[in-house]
Figure: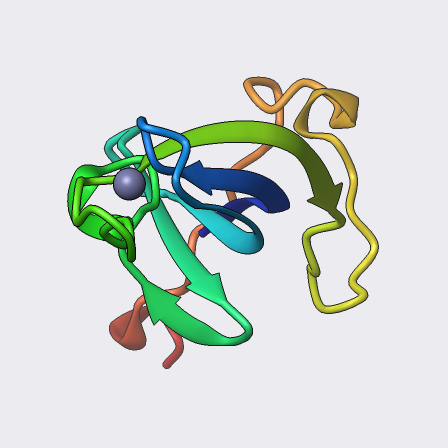
Length: 110
Ligand SMILES: [Zn+2]
């Protein structure tokens, strides 16, 4: 399930200060049932590799070095839940005392 959506403004720059660029990156974080977290990055709707990994950053157009990255700011976007009304699990009454209704077996109906 989608856990968090954010827009992150990053600054990509040459370590020798030849070049820099600021980019807004959309980040969608997924939580899998085992508790693992995965992030998917895109720029203007195009999927990209994480700019926080060297392979996800451009080379300096002047000297060809791998660029570096700074995270300048991030903005959280409300996660869509389909407009359904949500209630907290903790607000439910005690379940242990609830009578579990069994579905009738076929042969019991006769
Ligand atoms: Zn450079």
